[in-house]
Length: 278
Image (cartoon, rainbow, N blue to C red; front, side, top):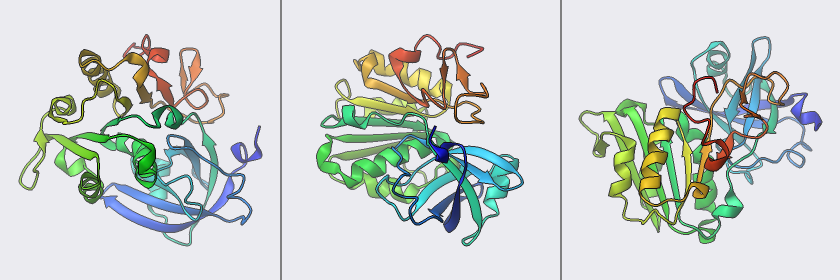
């Protein structure tokens, strides 16, 4: 096993952005100047961020894989370790193990129209794909970005969505279950947005990330609209702790999310989605 998967790289916090009152993005730079060469990740993979004396948490990488100077992670402060990470500032140091897991199917996506569907902070793993596609726009077809949140205040990166909506062959649709003044997008379910897209989606490759009930509802509607099961990919969330398939906390039937996932093709896991116990 690669040593970087067992022993943390030492990393410095080089940037910090407060996205919402509870969500922040940390930019990290590996201390070892030779580290970027062996460290390579793909969009959809995750790292284990190690706060010394407190513990580790799995966090998706949101930066571009060819952006060697800074590895970015967006975190919601919800527990002991993430609240500790929230207190970090530029110049502080943490440990980083990774990258882990299987990322998004970018080779299969080349030349195809893409539909990216996310819910809540599920947008973080997909943002790395959006960044990747935007930097290599000529390799892909039309792009539709669909994002749903419970409350309009939960939406992060509103400026980015507005900027992406202005790019060629790109459309953005946003929805909030609860909205108020200043919300000019749809009020309702994220699945409502499929019928508002101008891009025909039956030939698109779909990437989904977010709460499991949302993904199940989205898949049901996508299949009704003619998307093939093999064209649907999901990033699953479970309690990942060791990240190397040993502790069993992220076991999902015969698979471990930290090794065979977190990204799966829908036919691989269709029989396990929504089943209690998996």
